[in-house]
Image (cartoon, rainbow, N blue to C red; front, side):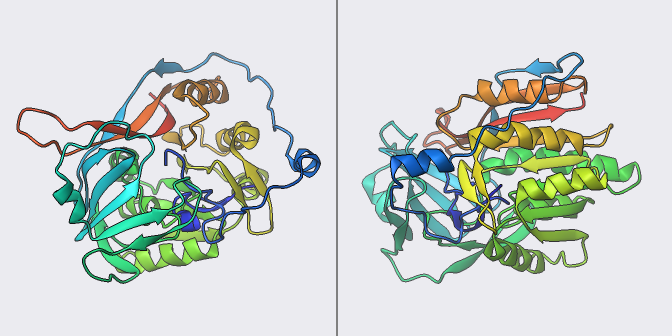
Length: 364
């Protein structure tokens, strides 16, 4: 019942993999459906919410609101934003893309924006398709990128995404530090990356000493992730690449009795799995988190949820995580992921662009 994160271009693909509102992850390699179903059919086809029972025990401690900020990293820089657009640098490529949350005026001169290498045009809806224009010179479909010592391919996709979501750097840095510490104490931590898209998070985890299971419903996304693994020189690392519906996969993991130290989940707002399974964020998220809790080790290191939906506030995902982790101890911190502009002067900090909501359970 879940999507992947393929041509999200984002949403990262469907049931396996999802800005403001990215395109449905599970749908990444398929164009979004444009037709409207008759109201009666729509009503019949909508899935029932998968509610879960109240758990016993005390709620975890909480830290809210907790803002996680990503700034410039090796291959990424948010240059400017405003008037519903953002100007970004990915490696050697300067990009202009729609950004509905950039309500303010741009700080930089029009000439700076006009110097972009690629501009996304077309449907301004996050799940809508469009095309890229190249004002300077025609560019190929892919180009090399490097973030946190991971080499991978950027790619111009029909949904405006480019294969990486830099706001996730804050989560990846936390995960790398935790995994490196755990690896030094012996053993090989197990990480499950649901809706894994192009695999950058999986590669960060593997390079930090983890045994990784990467799940995405899109074959195209899995192929892209494998390319990135080879490009990073990490073919010898223990990564299982699973093309499957995320919900079905974790249901089987629960039955098998398999458990993980860290689970990352970045579900789309809507998506379809490889066999037509339907994923609806608000209907299926409680059950998905419940299953994630069930397959966490008793001494787990973390459970991370990111949500790119404008219908929710961070409080909604925070309270859901608090109830999911009742009786598990630890602490839940929730808030927003933001990206900070570079700033245009030595005295004025860059503005923060909010990209998504998150809730993260930690053992302490």
